[in-house]
Length: 499
Image (cartoon, rainbow, N blue to C red; front, side, top):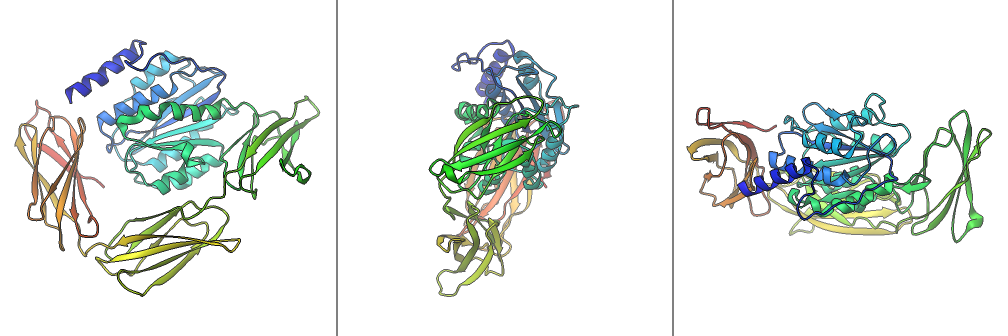
């Protein structure tokens, strides 16, 4: 633990002195890039000091090759906490050394994980002159998350993407894949990463290269490419008053089938939809102006293969009488989904049908402690069908831990105790997520209702969770945050239940 802390401190001291970290080597400078990069940083109490430091190190590694300045890259940080806070405006730090020091000086705020509020706040700042944002440059959001949020993120995230922001997500915890893949820009294989906090350097180059595709594209280019659509983006050549654009596009194998549309001079992006899958399109954007001549902008874009759905079916939020069924992807070519479910063993089944735009539904009125076979069938507009099945288990009645409490045993040790959960418990799993040092997982028999937790340094806040284990699946766990008093204060601890 001390060795890890010393290594992390050494890395940051080297970075502060302008030296490269050991084993990383010098990074070549990247020029000819222009964009506003905003980091959405989880600064809440759900993140340990160790994780927060590793994420800051990752942020700097990600942007340090860029040239910073009013005509290059600008960056900023918004904290996810009880109330969102901007660490510094985009235009405050205009050199590599200043940005490096600003990231290093960023302090964790603690508080709740109100990500939705932070995203709404980011939408305001991304397009605010007061925040130093520029109106005509690409916008990139990099959200590093441990997978936990106390509020909804879908609506504010979609608003950001609708305004032209490219969203990259890095999950260092057990985030919901369906939720995060919907939140990230498309395709998720390019914009969504799942990685342990200690392995963030593995994805740094891949993520930086994907960001460069956005901020180095200073002419007509396509983003958010799917099997049936893509979004075109281009620099601002015209205005509402100075002219308009003529947009032409056609498949390369049928140029005679060219389609044309006119856009006002205020546009800098446009989405083409109802396209054929696995088809290459020739696209031309012609700025029409009586004031200046602008040459036509051209590009060639290939749509993806038609998405086959459901490619995966996930079961979550199980209770004694219900569970949620989710599936992905959800292409536009699907008209509806049918969900067939019934207990195992057995020959009875019930059917639900939902709209083709949905990616989940809740199955209710189920028997407790029962295994169900769930089959999700996609009904395509063409008439074809595709099905995928999964097993789901309902929980036992009252299958949760109650009254988690702690007792100070001295020598950086606590005793965690809890009341027995109802039903046929096979055992308990106790996870301790330390503020400093590695997490631990302890499994005990159903007759044992307490464990000793060691290596909890004074002055640290640690998260302890106890979960009952049943035959079909885990029951509902109970988590509490435990603060070890500093050595200068009275020996003891404080704990609070996390909302």
